[in-house]
View (tube, helix red, strand yellow):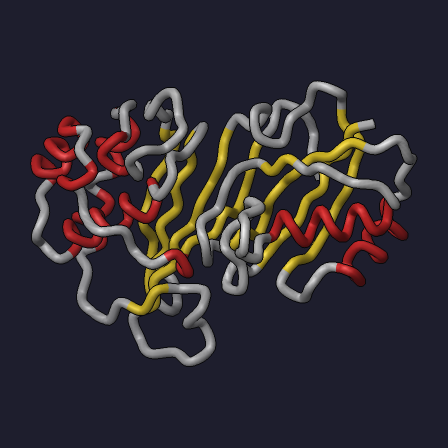
Length: 246
């Protein structure tokens, strides 16, 4: 039987989702906790990779087991094993071909910036105290939605067959503490959101025009785009599937 598990995690203490040699990861803790409860080795597949320090308020993974799982007691036991930085919220049975990564149709990320010194949110938002022009930053959104190849915002030497993505929505809005960038696409490349944010910052400071941004997109060259912003302001916030999830 195949199950989907919905979790959230604070990425600060981890080197991303995926298991790595000599580095702590979210996946390693999930595999250990599930294996302990189910008394067998468990292999999990996540909805995507997250870089070191990136957070997720909504993250799905799937695994298979021969045992029938009762949701409420299982989640209680699972959370008692998981470290404080990881929480499991829902578990449900899916079809044998439903896949946490490949069945996903949309993913949404938020990037948080705070502009007034605040001692309580430093590991979940990036402190940028300089003035930013929100209108100029939002003027780049139509260019993102109209474009397809995002090589200019991707890390080099990645194991992807294509750098094509479909961006459905992208918007900067003000918050009580600063700004948040929301972006939704069918898929994302490694480092893509952080590179887009860094380039938007250049537009917000007046260093970059819309025509400059269009040239960056057309260049397909990572060195033409802005610097990547720090990971700790980035959250994976939603995943959409063609079937019901909880």
